[in-house]
Image 1 (cartoon, rainbow, N blue to C red):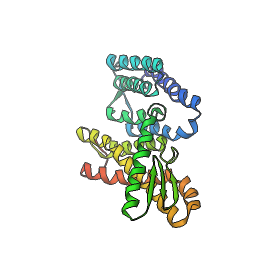
Image 2: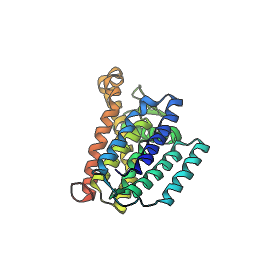
Image 3: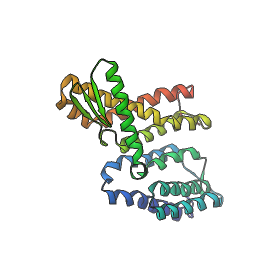
Image 4: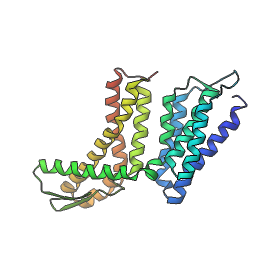
Length: 263
């Protein structure tokens, strides 16, 4: 390792820890967002083997200045999203200065490792729940069942099904985005296909989460509400992640044209 890289690497770690902890400690949601930390070792795995530059570091003034500006703006605006963008700017500058052949598109993974979705984009979670409840209402109605809906509360054949934030949480959504981006980085080559695949993650995540809501309703109707509220509900987040992984793998393998790690 280049000796000059050590202070920069230490600064990245300290700043990243500050950004990650500042919001979760205030809101008390650190335990719920811990799975997001998996994005950082996944990024390190994708970037391996790390090849350090033997030549003097290449200066990266643009990304470093952008990182500084975004960090200051994030602190002033109390925005984890902007702070995460600033940290990615510094990481990009670090990659360009001290490392060789690390694709910039891999930066999307550590960006998703910060809990900005839960802290700055809560409306996205509400939209997921509201539209998911509407889609489930249509599905059960097509099956000939009587369904009444008020917002995210469904009454299916007198069976109440409330789509609470825990049932379609933003942490589950962001975890799905991390899983999807990992598959995209491995399967889909760089270029327009890569970014189109990233854009497709939200509708794919919506399909996976809405499928879970539908399965919860079916479980309650077939086996009773106690079963639906029991282990099936508690482990539903893991079930939807597995389903989303399989869905993304099929879609992105087809998109890439052939299996294998993308260049």
